[in-house]
Amino acid sequence: MGKGKLIVISAPSGTGKSTIIGELMKDAELKLEFSISATTRPPRGTEKHGVEYYFLTLDDFRQRIANEEFAEYHEVYEGRYYGTLKSEISRITSKGNNVVLDLDVLGGIDVKKIYGKKALSVFIKPPSVETLRRRLLSRSTDSLEDINNRVARAEYELSFADQFDRCVVNDVLEDAVAQAREIITDFITKK
Image (cartoon, rainbow, N blue to C red; front, top):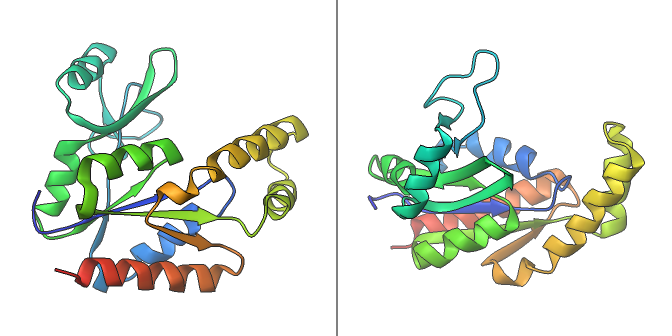
């Protein structure tokens, strides 16, 4: 690992994690660089290897698992893997930048186990499960069955919040971004 540090941000779906990360990425003082994930899925449209994803064959991905080259990975369904290569983390930190990892809850816990104090794990929480349900309903992008499944998954994921270094409640977006920025600034400025 180089001079940069790792910031792991995890949250249940619909909590506003991507929006918060997007706002944090605009702050040049944080020197954040987004980690590019590896996947076994084929490129879509104009996606390029090394830009949106590192596109790997199933055999290559499995060989890299065997070689312990991943900080975290998961098989979304049979033969469809996503993961974070340790080499990607090194690529970013060696430049002195801080790596931002947008991971599911279990992936976030896995990375923290490997990198320990070099990683800050932040869990973004909804103000309540009911608020999350209302947000998902207001999006009007999912069926009621999908929303119920996402809420049930969120309840499960919320049970892991205490395994993260810090929690940020996303009630008012600007406040959540400011709190996350403060937590990250404290972490990256510590020697």
